[in-house]
Every structure is written in structure tokens, then in C-alpha cells.
Image 1: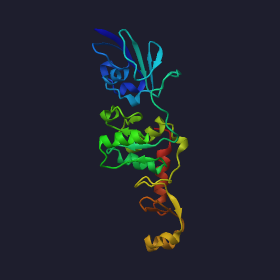
Image 2: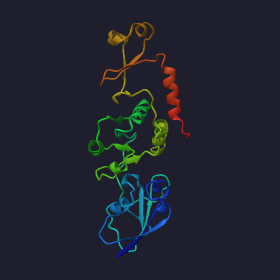
Image 3: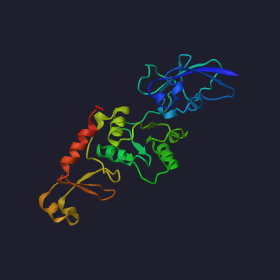
Image 4: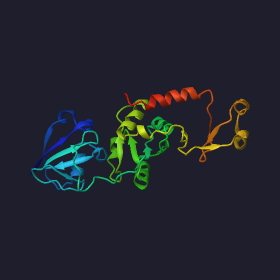
Length: 248
């Protein structure tokens, strides 16, 4: 029977059994396996992995594990400065785009409020999320570890907390999005990109007092939702400021 040593670092220990966390694990195995399959056998989803060193050499997910290998697995936070010859996954454009599973609706709304392209529907099943992520090169945001382990998903993140405001800052920090925030540029209802519109074009849709007191409007060309800086704007601005802070 073959034997390896494997060590998971930093935030990857959120997934490893407590008895094996933050330590060198001695593991016996009796079948051919890729390092990706070996990593996920410890419940660590492959999209959370940023760097794999085998006997000190960077490898990709296709590497076949050998007897007596010493494997070190790192997340994005805390990876050593080693550039793999074969990257684990293609690079994403900046700013990145997201698809969010059906349990994270408020996170999707908050990310849209800050200007990020974030697909969400409350009837998205796991298969739909995985397919959209693969076809459109979107990052999956989820609290479902099994969803992230689907092989067609290349980019993803397991959201740690249950609190939507903290979830938002968590995602902003993980993907270094604070410099890219452009609030009030996307529709929080459907994700469409907002555009300015003349009052004359939409005044038939406005309530009398809104028509009387406001002159500047944005509209979503996808769903027709209209936005203006009404009495609710102070509350929205306060929420944007709260979400945009880098302090937890």
C-alpha cells in the first residue's frame, strides 16, 4: 500500500476534519488518484486551492500521486511566492463576475448594489449554477461545499459566515474588490447595467410627488426598474458605506 504526507494550510483547514487540521497528515491509499481527487477526499473543494507543491515542486490538479509524495496545499490567502509551470486554472478578467446559489440572495443584492455583475435566481439548482459558471467563466459563491466540488467549476468560493453584510465584505476581501466598487451602477433586482434616462421618457411611470420633486433618474434597460435619490437614499448610502469598509 502506498503512503503520502499531505498538509493543508491556512483557510483550507476550515474544511478538514478537526483532528487533521493544521498538521501533516499521513495517508495510505491503494488506487491511482490525481492530486485533485486526493485533496477533495479530505473535503477540501478544488476551487479553494491556489497552489499545490509536491516534493517542493508546483504541480497542477492532473498530477498523479506517487508513493512517498510530500504534498503541501495552499489557499489564495497565504500561498508562498511560487509560480506553477502549469496554472491550476485560467485567470479571470477584472473585475470578476459571479453566479450565486439560491441560498445567498441578499449577498447577490449587496454585490449588485456595489456595482458587481452577479447572476442570481432563487430557482437556480446546483446543476444550473455549475453550468453557468463553466460556460460564462463566473465565480461560484456558495455555502454548499458539494457544489464547489463539481468538476466543471474552476473558480469558486465557500462563503464562511451566515450574515449577509459580513458575507459581502468577505467576498470583497477574498477577491480584492474594494478598489473596484462602483455603487449604484447595477440593478439590484435583475443585475442589469443602469443608464441615465430623461424624466420625460419615464414620467408616466412615476408617482405624483416623485414627478414633482425629482429630476434625475436611472433606469434598468433589462427590467425597467427606475431609480432616483429619494428619501430612501440616505439609508442606501449608509448601507453602501457599511458594506464598503475593509474592517470586519
